[in-house]
Length: 362
Image (cartoon, rainbow, N blue to C red; front, top):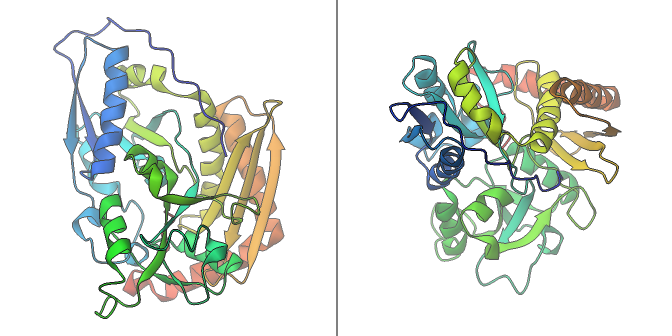
């Protein structure tokens, strides 16, 4: 994973008058609002003469909390409504969970800044009452139900732990944890068998003060379950209009260089492979002791029966070098059989286009 990033040096700016107000858009979930508040707090330290106003907007996925994420059609599941406001001037910036941002943005918009990154790994959360029995995915018995809406997570778990089953779970972090813990008492209902565990992002649990629920951190090692995280996971991406130089200048001091380079390399892998379609890809970046960036990536079939893996290390010091590095890793994946997997995925997407069942990467 990426090493903990150094906090940006706070040098207050006095170049803007107190009348300046920057409208900061975000989703309305508790986690999204907390992330936006973090960004605004840091920006106020940098620019005490500038007013920052947070505005919450519901995305398509926020409005529909029933449909499984992988059954929504198209890209921009979490971003379209916010980007429409940004494009028309209703917002000046958007704070995104970077993993939710498409790798190709609408014309006129730009990924202006990536802040210091939280832990990018996925984690296992075991149902209350089962913590003494199960600590890791490998401990779960055959037929145990794991909750997730992510095809990426399902595919990788099926590859490593084919004895497990899955059930969709939606909602914010508190809602998902409540569904997990109460699923045993409601298992006789139409909701199905109870969950034994959930797979969630470590970053969200950390930011919401739920560290104590984590029973296993997942990563590419054997002890970590051989699981790679989503592209950009743990990072916050700040989007702005590409021609709004005033706002771009306000954001530049907030960027964390190490996080930006790692995330740009990850996003380049996806951008190169997806060809306009989302794919279930896992990645893992880590800065080695010699300052080189190590990037591992995997593409796994939905059934978990086929996979292509790649890993490379490179000196990366600029955004362009990060993008080129990601392209090389994507080529290694393709050469290793990723294209065959992607062809099957894309053919299935095309066959099911009218039923709007693409793959969501979360």
